[in-house]
Image 1 (cartoon, rainbow, N blue to C red):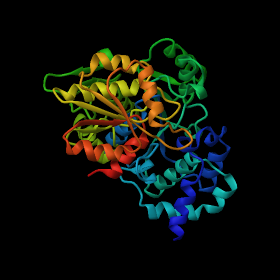
Image 2: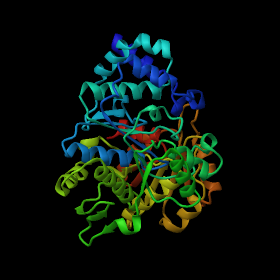
Image 3: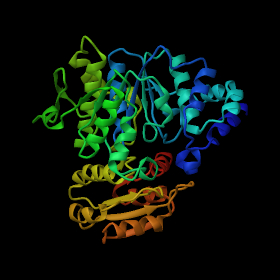
Length: 426
């Protein structure tokens, strides 16, 4: 009973996904107070921070998997979770039990009452406690939102990664892509390596300007010369230090190849001598087991893909992968958005890319940032979609009905949609 109440108290802390901007508390005072009160579990560990509009969870997971394969005990903190909050904190792919987590919440109850952290701050600190308990040597931490003011940026990182800059959370990060790039690049640390994905202008210049002012050591990967797909379907990736061949793509889509190159570049900068190529192949090949990553182009069932793509650029990449696999099928796109997300011009693009038989079914999302299905449908129409469009309150009902009828389905647009599908899987 005490454990159940402890978990309820943890879940009741203000979270941005459900409570909105009330959960965003500027400043590092609370996370630093938590870490101090917990005995500084972050110390004496290698810290890697991963920021980006899209791709940070995938990149962090690839890096963690290769690290674990190389014999480095590796903690991985990601957000948000899909089913259990313990998914946010994994060591070599293994999450703690809910009993362990509840026990830690009870253990630090007085500290939490004094500090009054947000849900993200509390779970980040608890992740680091789990990593310390498991004697993790390396901690790969995904930035929650933005970069400069994210609680994870209070950590003294040994290496940082920027995966992408896109139009998301601009009401918080700034009105232009340059503003977004500057906020994300601000996780860089003086004298420490910073690995950056190829960015379009003016984002690239804005990020470089911030990194130069910090004094970070920047390596920009080159997707044109650094990524090659071979006839046998494997990847040849070229980092600043070497070339690695016969890598099996860990996730589908060209955007994931960029993420793989970012993770490999990080491995090469973290290890001297370099980790042998066979170990890296094993790590990427076992990524889901060694990191616990879910719902990135994942085929949950035959003909059923789930993906947490939740903004225009991420969703377009996922739709390309899904529709390219659809062949002669009739695609059903089951999509739900939070209120601050928008399909942009995806509807117009989709009309030209998807089969004429494609259907969109919009579903409700909840919480302070939720969006009703009919409002989501209107946004798709405004984005240029003129094909069939329906609404429903429950994606699980769609899964049960359409799966019986052999539909080819994608569930995406929000973690909430994927979470409900995972819970309802037949």
